[in-house]
Length: 270
Ligand SMILES: NC(=O)c1ccc[n+]([C@@H]2O[C@H](COP(=O)([O-])OP(=O)(O)OC[C@H]3O[C@@H](n4cnc5c(N)ncnc54)[C@H](OP(=O)(O)O)[C@@H]3O)[C@@H](O)[C@H]2O)c1
Image 1 (spheres, rainbow, N blue to C red):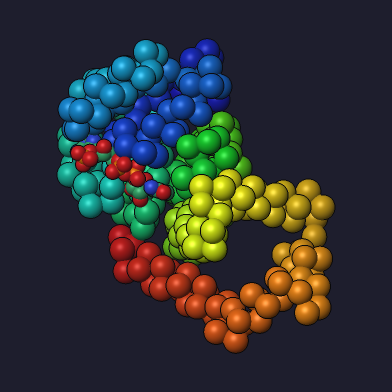
Image 2 (image 1 turned 30 degrees about the vertical axis):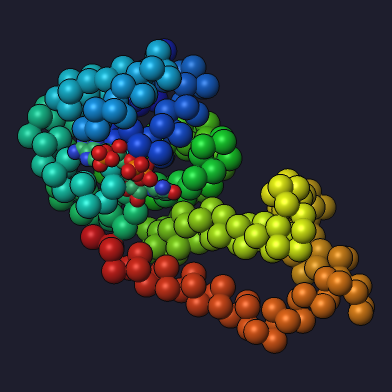
């Protein structure tokens, strides 16, 4: 039976209910089309999830693999090999597996799970607030229906694009890590505000600037450079700051950092 033939609730099993697993579960629950099961080794985390979401059920790995039509692999990449070995030993029927693990190729997954149709996906932490960016890439055996279903599922936590697998490391280095980069930059701005006397107000100001900056660029459909020109009048305060950053080659430093992240993603690729 193909996934598109599933009428009513779709059983989704999540292996590894950490930050991303929970964010995905939250999005899926809102869609009301999915029944969520999870398997997790961290006892405290199991209790925390069960206390927070009465609709989400804990299962043993074997029960989860049996019950779920779709299985999401959401453990850390270094824990994946062990999980794949166990899953393969208990899996009886062919199923759709979705991996969100950074750096794990569809061919590696196909070799470890011979009875799996695989879709690889790189979401980001935006999932926590239903505003993720997710790039998906199908494995060789994934059907058009599988891709449609995965797009539908991950649309519950934000925007989804299908991309070719050779760009997955670049996606990881830009949008996967991106919330971490912007969090770092936010922190620097907030500290700067505090140091010039703004105290607790600094955080609100910086957050408001970040949200409105993204909205202006998106909603007015202008380039970030146009926005810079709108704000930085000649001889003014913004220009004073930006001239120092330009002299210090800040833009190049940002690009070098993203390239370093890309190198690391390639090193981790299996
Ligand atoms: N975080 C991000 O921004 C982000 C973005 C895109 C993709 N990803 C990918 O998402 C995956 C999960 O990341 P995360 O940040 O959600 O990690 P996380 O918070 O550490 O969650 C992973 C969870 O899996 C549990 N686990 C470990 N081994 C297990 C096993 N054998 N069976 C069941 N559960 C097991 C961990 O328990 P313990 O804590 O006890 O080990 C933990 O609760 C990673 O592969 C990562 O590459 C993450």
